Image 1 (tube, rainbow, N blue to C red):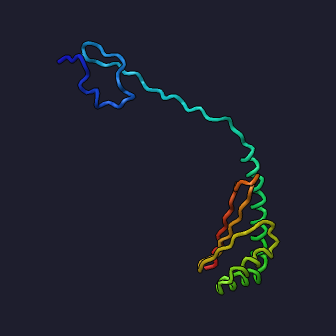
Image 2: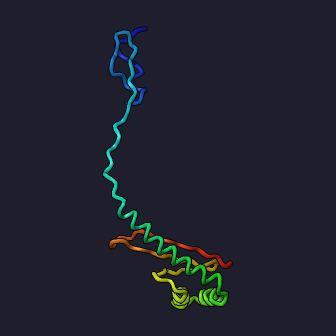
Image 3: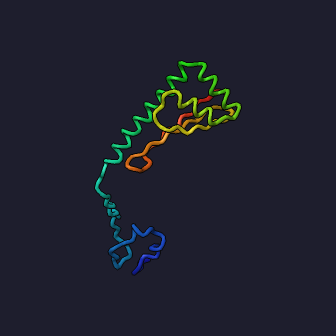
Length: 135
């Protein structure tokens, strides 16, 4: 049976719709190529500065880890004060390791969570979170 229109046209997705309809009913399809979105020019300045700021966070993390791995007495004090729920004392002990930046301290019965933030040009650019288990 020949159709002057395609009875199955509604079943095809819009990107397969025929653009030429022959009288005997066979549609000709054109493959759909979407237009690529134009992206803005790349400005890697903040990304570059963020990487530099993150290096400082990594250095601070290294200072803390070196101190905790070398000084068993410090590790004991931090864990003891955390069990007594003395957050300020735990923070003082972490800062006594010689860390340069600000460290957010959180702990739970399983371990210690240390979070360090950095800013570039007044924008929060990077965050380093360390989780150290003690149980």
